Structures are given as structure tokens and as C-alpha cells.
Image 1 (tube, one colour):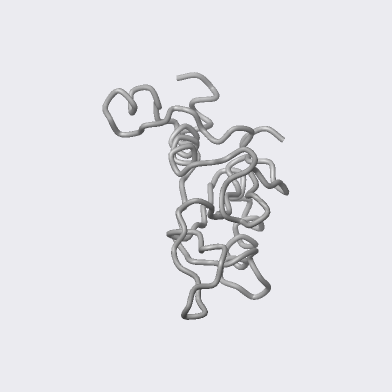
Image 2 (tube, rainbow, N blue to C red):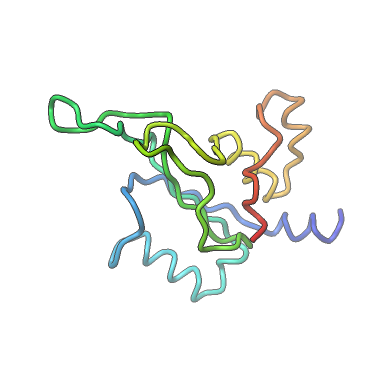
Length: 141
């Protein structure tokens, strides 16, 4: 194993599945977890991925709510040596469809698997992943 493989293998994956709308707010569980991770110097060796199950429709429905919308969604990914303070991808003006640098769940999974040291080409050959290309620009500032 090369030195970079050893570094990747030491990364731990922390996956928090939570429904959230927008940024992590003051006093939230997510904010506390991220702050403690940083204070304990875990933010370079732990990857945190927060996502919901779907995005929401860009228009209000007849019941004055919003339905599931798989075309555009948001998630927060931090730690693990990922440069922060960036947004990757954008939706169109109606928040209905990707407009710039679309990112798929498959891209994200490939990035996470690669980060923890799994061989994406072997996983692809075994039918575990469909995509061997991670999120473009995720690990570069």
C-alpha cells in the first residue's frame, strides 16, 4: 500500500442520514456534532455526509405543501480533507433541474468509497457501483 492509500484507509466514514432544509442552524444537533468534530481534530480524518431522502418540488402543491422531487436535492459533506466553503453544482432558476455541474448520488458514493480506500474499478467490475467517477472538484479547492 502506498502512503496515500494508508492515509485514505485511516479515514473513517461517519454517515448521518437526516432530513434538513437549508444550512445547519444555530443550536442544531448537526452544528454541535460538526463543532465537536472540529474541536477534537476529527474533521481531517472523519467524513460527514448529511442528506435527506429527496429534494422537494419547486412548486407548492394543492395541499399547500411540497412533494418529493428527485431531480434536485442538497446535501452537506465535510471533513476528510475536503476543502470547505464551496458549493458544487447549481439548479436552474426554478430549482427544478440541474443547471451547472450536476452531481449524482452515484458520484457521491464513488467519492466516499474512494476516500475510504476501496478500489472503485473492482467494485464496478463486481456490480457494486455504477460510477467510478467521484464528484468533480470535491477534493480540490
